[in-house]
Length: 267
Image (tube, rainbow, N blue to C red; front, side, top):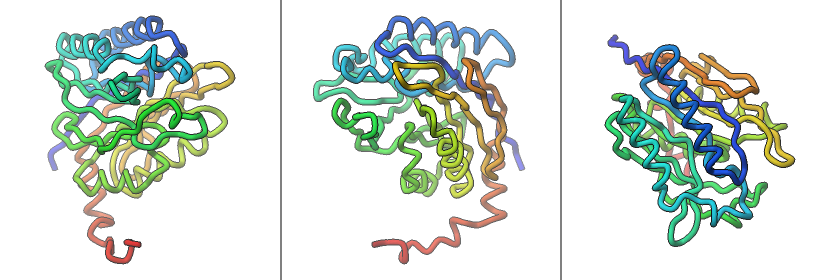
């Protein structure tokens, strides 16, 4: 079977809530480090809401209008270095409010896809400050169909299964997942990988914002549910190479999708 190798770099970074300028500087430094040290990655990803953090009481004034500042930085970087970027997610300002949005850039700097978080986390009052997206997120990573979810989205297995049934073989998840729910983070991501027989690539933030601490533990999981790479709690670049052809091997060995009985699942 032909291999489909993809080199990944996940930027597990500290995010300063309410300080876009500081966060853009930090991200720029880590992007440069990602391409100039070690093996050059094919694809780079970073955490959720990296531009503003969860400064929700100021978010309308801090949000990046239509993602223009973000697009300018990441488009130029991806084009210069020939890398694909799953741009974490940002607070993106639109006429009808602020969205939590991922932009994906191809190796030539074009916006390839976008996705806005569809499940808003009430425990952090997201629904009071943010607008929910209304479409699922898909793009091509390398030559492979991939899906996107953001943080709280991973608690909704229906979304991951819908993406898998649509042909995706990888799931990219930027997050700001805080203490003390590390067990939930790892368990949910492992479950999404195992039940959908796909790679799960999840990038969490680290550091402290106000009274919240973030444990990092960005992670790359294969379709057997085996952990390929996992970060600790410190700021770091998590690197790994995956072979996407493993998805087809796993799905042929345990034919979960062929054995589904969807007529019995419908309410």
